[in-house]
Length: 124
Figure (spheres, rainbow, N blue to C red):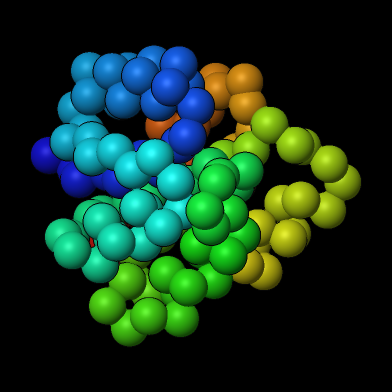
């Protein structure tokens, strides 16, 4: 079972995504803000992080940079998730260290395709 860290501050999104990802076979842990996400990623191993970019405490852009700068977490692939799908946001997420980018509202099949593609790349 793949271990996934979901970093999402919105209760409804967090609940919906965690339940649906769990049903698809992921072992989902939850963080409610960027600081909590950093702490959890440093405390236990994850195969992938799904990171909302608009977070309190520490936004997703900053969290991604810190995760990739830390040797303990730099190897964990990150999927940026944002409702702010503006021109250049995908590039901005990749520059911050994210490995993939997806938009809200979440299309679960599309998100899972991106997660699986990252995991396949990481294992090859």
